[in-house]
Image (cartoon, rainbow, N blue to C red):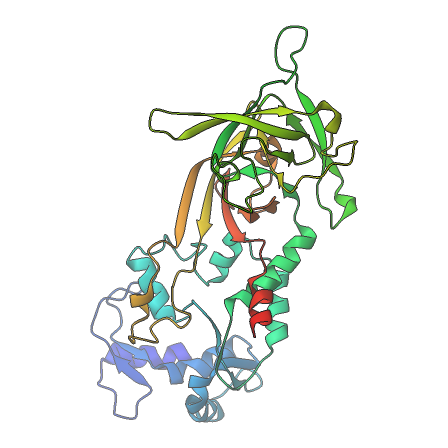
Length: 391
């Protein structure tokens, strides 16, 4: 019925009257080429498409409220294959630091600001899935904020709190070093062949779910730690590694820093430590305490990985509020790509698309199509809780 009416108009190429539910566009169509010059208007096609496809309730945002009389009028004057659909309007779900306009999202892709529609910075379902947002957490967020007829803008930190809560319960823990610095244990023993001994330490996979069990992580003389976990001249209240200080290596040993090595430019390229053999598992038998526990990976067994870190795509809470143009608030540093990361070997066997927690760093999603590329889904810090405290 719908296609028949439009084809008659198009083939006759008659100019529609002012009240016609069609418009003329004399241009090449990307799908039908030059076969047609007359096309249905949105109001003419909307209700018929719903009826033909068996839609019972058409859910639209508030700007379509004024279109509903035409939607109903056309349907009431046309033969329908089933019951007449009903249009219902609700407020658009808006988030801070985010745009949802399809026209503007298309511009982000066309201008190369993002890679594609599935870029993890995009608020599209494909983008959210690639970034590692669980569908169940998105549904819980939508259920929490509810459906309303008053436009409002929700804090993106609120959505992230739902994501973080879900992933805390379900994601396996792994160790990864994003900016590696070599750490050498100078008093580490050698085996009978003169090679450094290799140990395997048992580490819990998920403290929130004992059923996830444990794994064995290789440990030896040369490790990688985060570069920010060492400072030669540490300020007050810096509790990580610095000359003379003892720290805990996660699930392994207590180590004390004895010095460091620098390159010709004065950059630290290696840290030296001694370990206490009596502290296997990270606990001292004499009960002494340390103020910092650091993650690590074995240099000999580490796998290579690329990690993408994301910040807000727009710097302003409401993009364009100050100037009227959202693109004035684009964040030029919304993504940082780290290509020399070192991760524990089990991550090489992590299925594509899986989200894991990098201990002390946050939750990271294994890219659905690229092995050993991980996207930061969300950090560990609950920013929404801090916002609530301030309010």
